[in-house]
Image 1 (cartoon, helix red, strand yellow):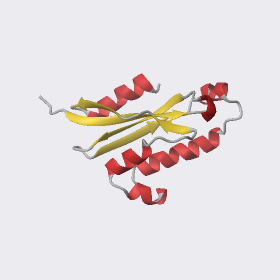
Image 2 (cartoon, helix red, strand yellow):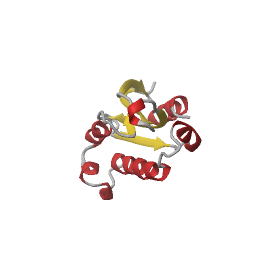
Image 3 (cartoon, rainbow, N blue to C red):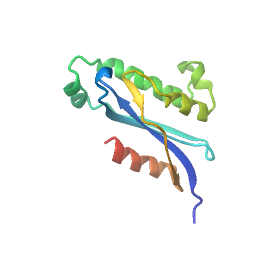
Image 4 (cartoon, rainbow, N blue to C red):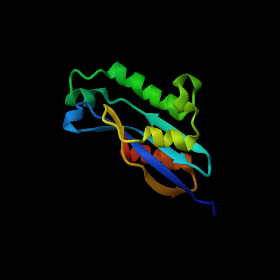
Amino acid sequence: MHEKHLYDYAVIRVVPKVEREEFINVGLMLYCKRQKYLRIQYRIPAAKISAFCKEFDLDQLKINLDSFVAICEGKKEAGPIAQFEKDERFRWLTAIKSSSIQTSRPHSGFSSNLDQTFEKLYSELVL
């Protein structure tokens, strides 16, 4: 039997109008300390976002989400935060913010296959 590992995940949300507090799930981050695993993926449902706010800047959203990915992946060009350890990057990205990109509170679980768990959560919570 495969060993199960504790992981944390958070859903990435777009809040087209922050003052209305309505959000659309657009991505997922999953972190496992023991396996040194940190993964992120997103998609932009343009029609759904535009239905909430016609003037929402989808190009800027892509730039901002790409920054999330670069920080999560530890890319140097993403700045000093991207150089933090994986757990610190996960915590920084999931900190509560009042902006158009927010995350859910982190949730925990156990998995023997983190990639499979990521795909399952992404399919259930984002797609």
